[in-house]
Length: 200
Image (cartoon, rainbow, N blue to C red; front, top):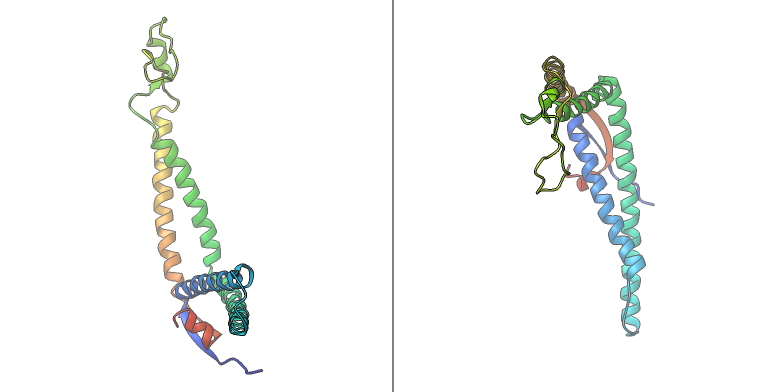
């Protein structure tokens, strides 16, 4: 068996992420193509030896491509493993966990803060609504729509808006920090054929 040619490539962590994405896509396409040949080939009639030879060639090509796909898949796992180790070493993993937390907090707070509208009535204003006011459903032709209640007083809303602003600022700062850390270099040895599939 011929030994595959290998070469060491030194790239930033950001570039290695892109390499892994490209290789994963290449793997998916190669497997799909091979599977299609090996499981969905159909003919209308037997046309003789030439047809047999063609189909055998197609089978061999599909199996070769499947082997190549698995080598690519091995490379993807290898790259992701080494990038994962580098992420821990550079402190990126911890910062990404914090970043995810902040993004979820921003989403939760913005949904509450930004859904407050001018047609809401505060809890204390409810007592000034006429006693005979009764909403008659949610249909478009309702004469009296349901009353939207502003559950938050201005102080509570302001506090949530401040939390939202602070969480956004912290997320932006952390995003920049992670971006800078992802400029760290990492050297990985890959088969030249696999590297070529990733555009290296």
